[in-house]
Image (cartoon, rainbow, N blue to C red; front, side):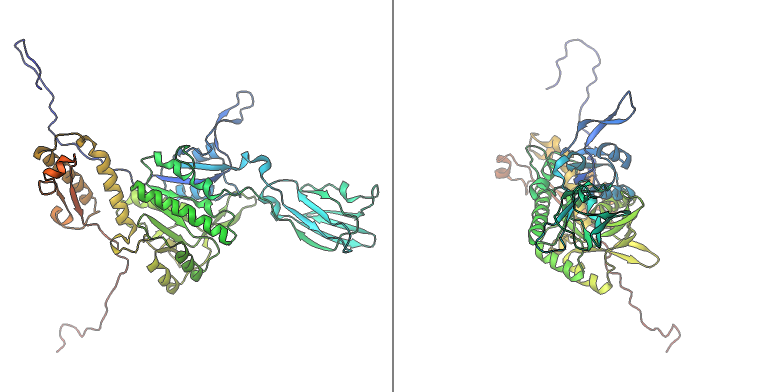
Length: 508
């Protein structure tokens, strides 16, 4: 209703009759779920100047914008997890801001971590054996070994660079239980001479999270489920799902269960995309069998193979390690989004930080994997290691390519946010015209960015909102239906030159 005027004069009123621009939603925000060295914000101790834990962020999605910020909150590299390396690879390949959910912090496990050990049998069958255990808990003890060499009535024990000779199992006479090694403790001493040989320690490590730990709980905002409250997440990955993979059927079921949950969330929430890893140690045939085993059929996920070799920055001196490629790949998604746009397929791009591949695939091997939706990473002489696939896991040809699904994710999320003003407006021809105007203006910017195919707007997209779509019975239900059609640009996956002999223009 117009204002009531009683005094003569000039009155200026603001009238909302212009268009309401729709801003394109972000396409690149990634969310990592896995294991970190630490999980707390820090503060400086005023007396010592040391960084001390201030507030735990365990199982809380925390925004980080660079590697330094990640280190300050979650610690650095650790041999017990893949997530730190994945985040480093993400930023190294052009990744921007990302959410990190640490479902397990290694420094908070305490006595839950196990120590590696080895049993040294006695030289005589019935005598009691010796059990040796690493002094430190965790996987580091698995690198230790003990060498026993008998010399008459005594024996020597070697652990790494340390050797103790002249040992016996007689109390007060060089008793083995009193021997100190920097990395080893004797927890159970035998009653007879030990048998010669070298014995590797094993069994050290940290508790591996279960499928339920990864999936989490939406009410408690934990794990993958906790990401539901974050509307700006577009890419989801879980590299630590492969930690401790032993090839067993139980572990395979765990991976399948968690990846199924990730895909289900992406499909239900509509505006996010899953980047999945394959297990380690697979050849091309086994990778194909894995694809048949998980049997996903979705346009909301892509799968990458094989693993990449990177510098193991948690070790000194520096070594290398193989890790799932998802973190590096999502960084490439961000790089392509920034340099070209989300409409370009994130492929034919160098994987920065990758030193080698777990398996160098042949063209023929990729020919068996590409059609079933496994995106291969390949090494090309003189061109480096590159992502060489851009397919989703969908059997529907219309949704074959990653960039097509991501285009619809961005457009859908943008319209969802930008058209909220329409709710509860009078559902008449005036509203329909406003909706068409705003949607056309937004899709024009998408077309101008190169995301839609066509030399004109009419060839690239259409927007329909009229009485045909919104008859009386629809309006009586309180509904307003708008139909949008888009012609997405698809990648030139197969480039074919047809070469033939030509006699020339003067040939008869």
